[in-house]
Image 1 (cartoon, rainbow, N blue to C red):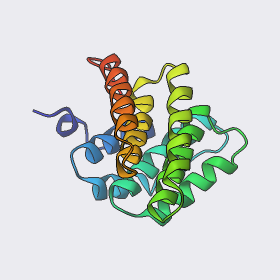
Image 2 (image 1 turned 180 degrees about the vertical axis):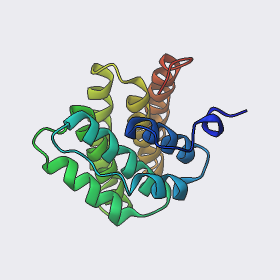
Image 3 (image 1 turned 30 degrees about the vertical axis):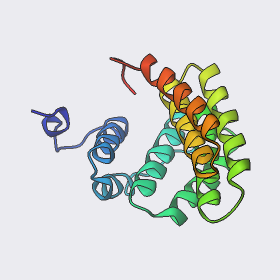
Length: 168
């Protein structure tokens, strides 16, 4: 039985709801995650909890193709003076990918994604570093820069291997 299916349906703390929502996104049920997260009221006086909720919501919006909502959430994260460093990095990553998808420079996006990956690696957040390097690899591939694509794909794999058996 899947852990998500064993979680209680009654009142649960927001952190547990965020974990459940991320699980739904991972299982291809992004709309279910959006429905779960949107009613939560983020407490801006708790920057870590607020940032966690905002990044989970951005992830659910991205998974459901609601790019304008992703951008709105990212803008809020980037404006908030006490946003956690990891939330800012995630918001910058989403903003960069959305801008490149809309026609801005893929080369610039790749540079930003590598910078974010390096920063997340320094923060010892290998999963998020891997996502940044993976997206940089895709950008290099799209530009026909196959050597760069391979290099950043390997960095992504190296970071993902650090998460084996660990949460997140």
